[in-house]
Image (cartoon, rainbow, N blue to C red; front, side, top):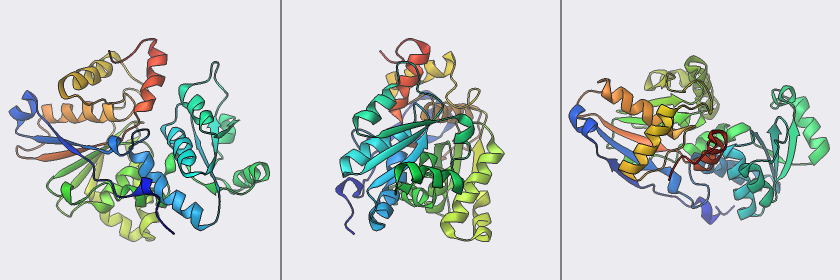
Amino acid sequence: MKEPRIFENYTAEIHEINSELLESRGVKLSILREDLSHSGFGGNKLRKLKYNVLKAEQKGLDTLLSFGGVWSNHIYALAALSKELGFKSIGIIRGEDPPGSTDTLDFARSCGMEIQFVSRGEYREKNEDFFKSWLREIHGSFHFIPEGGSNYLGVNGCMEILGKHSRYFDVITSSCGTGATLAGLVLSMGPHQKAIGFSAVGEGQHLKKEILQHISWTLGNSDSALDFENHFRIEDKYDFGGFARTNDELIDFIRQFKNEHGIVLDPIYTGKMMFGLFDLIDKGRFVPGTRILAVHTGGLQGVRGIERRLGHPIFD
């Protein structure tokens, strides 16, 4: 089975960040630009989909089905990737079709994705066997991808984010939703490195358990997963009230970050990570000389959803 060109190894650019705060605290900070891995939908979602797509090909299936909300980065990436590689795609969307739709759903439909809305109660059953059987009665055969692409195949894809170029760093950071990306980073880090996950949803203890579960599934051994428990920690105080919640302080931060460093962050994932990271650095939580690599996981299409809620653009 030949790997599609879109999945050929991408060596992410590393951009060093310079600021008075970093200099005063003696900390080195760089950003791994996973968001540049594809012109349309680069980032961790592409990594998570890689081995899911290859598994579908191996099984002889031409349809990919997954789940998400009306502004889901995952649904956006799945629709675009399916179109590019010639797959059919089905998006099972939580809730009702919003008035006027959303840019994400409009884009997914333009890529040929079939959209099916289910109630929030039904959505909570999405991983149950009876729910999958019901979907197969409706849609026929498909390769099932969990929400966010977060299965062991997705974790394997995220294990390819770090390369030899990342061994120089002491700390690896990433934003976290389902935890699959951080699981992949933890499994691929060097023995001298630690990881910090900045939760976009709060619930740090629950997220830590999810990450250990991802590691267990990937290794096929729950006891071995516990060996990684002390290799990472979750910061859950920078979620700004919950998933996709924002305030003026966060919006001002990502505007200033773009103006100073020329890098766009989103208010849902990467903006919260970078805000939290700068706050920890300011509070002296890293010893002088620490070298930090922050993974930019993409997801910039989600900015439009926040802008619609705010009623004005975030960036000039």
